Length: 142
Image 1 (tube, one colour):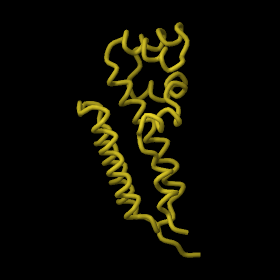
Image 2 (cartoon, rainbow, N blue to C red):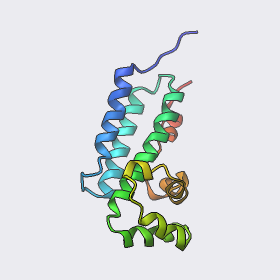
Image 3 (cartoon, helix red, strand yellow):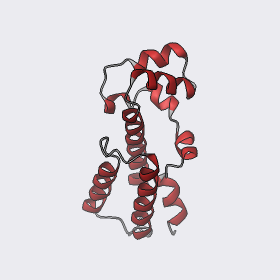
């Protein structure tokens, strides 16, 4: 069976550009981030809509959600802000203050059970962040 797929350099460039857009120090805000991500992801997936790359999209989507959690955590610079916002996300008071005071790095904390519980995929979708898999499934031709 023969099928189309995106070249590995194209996939690497896609991830590299997503990494550049979700850079922790760009300081451009959530509105800019959402619009830029939507624009870039939709454009890339539309270009490769004929390609069969579901496994790549699934793994990239998981990595991308971790990047988003890292970006949001970085934007909550102060311990007090982190604690209060974690409590708003439904984390208990004890755990939110415990994790707000952590010394772990941004990337490491982005995969913790506390942040994955606070920023579920549904919450990220509700906040307006695009999901790569949804765009791919909508545009992909069988």
